[in-house]
Image 1 (cartoon, rainbow, N blue to C red):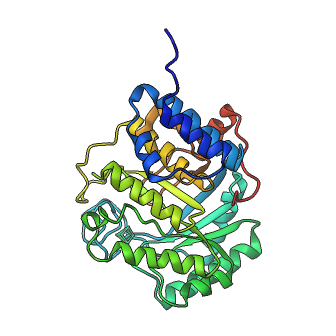
Image 2 (cartoon, rainbow, N blue to C red; image 1 turned 120 degrees about the horizontal axis):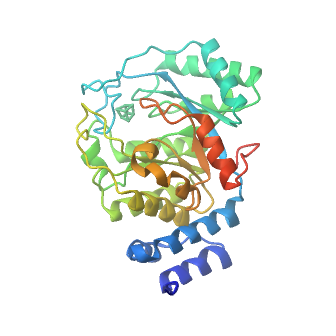
Image 3 (tube, protein in one colour; image 1 turned 90 degrees about the vertical axis):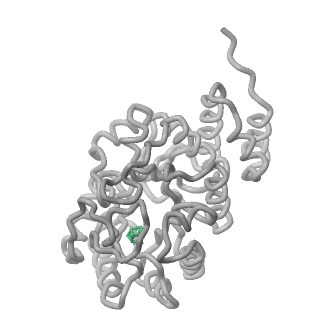
Length: 335
Ligand code: SF4
């Protein structure tokens, strides 16, 4: 049986991304979305080549720590940390600085180069901001690791204070494209989230922002998100796959088919070739045996261990996967 010929959109994408070294445009992205499943292995192979050409073979490993869990006043329909839903999340107050430093040490011990402090809030009040600034200073003094933070919507001046404290990357996911966002959240807007992303960049921190695939969004919504992230200069893009949480409005949502999830990864790589594309939540349940395939379809970052409200598989299993694939763990952040 003959290997299928490379279809024109893949030839054009390879010329754009590998020869001219620029990201693909919307028209070409739509053509890649329309490729038949028969051509998926070729699309994944191209995304992998793009990742190698733009970012190299190393994989960035990070851990995220839920420093304060649950009780968020917002109404994001996918989120078990919203106080509005009866999800099985145990509320936890803010972790003490000593505990955060210890967890950063553990992250360093497994090869992590970045330690992200996450709190479930609409945005930080003064007490929370001061606690994170204190924890950042203590962590940077005690552990050779970069500190990132995810504290929700930021007001004027807050991004600058975090940057001055040594937070090098700030996570604020856009979650979905602008057309779909109002269907998953009504207590704040897509533009509110974009404004925080712009504050992060203006303050000199690297922007980490991504989304969740499988909430009922269309391919057009996904491409909208990918191009907004590109235009914002996003350095790291967490790829989450909806793992429906019981008790949330999306609790009964059908899981995304694995090959569709991997097509999302490959498209995001071709639209954001110079970003760290990071596996985040939901990959175990959505991709199952195909998790390693994502590493050959554009992914070059891993969040290992705890995903805030669901336990990921062990860090050892992920490190074994990287060793089996012959992919080195990055000794420093890739961006
Ligand atoms: S703002 Fe964040 S923590 Fe709060 S409900 Fe939305 S996604 Fe969850």
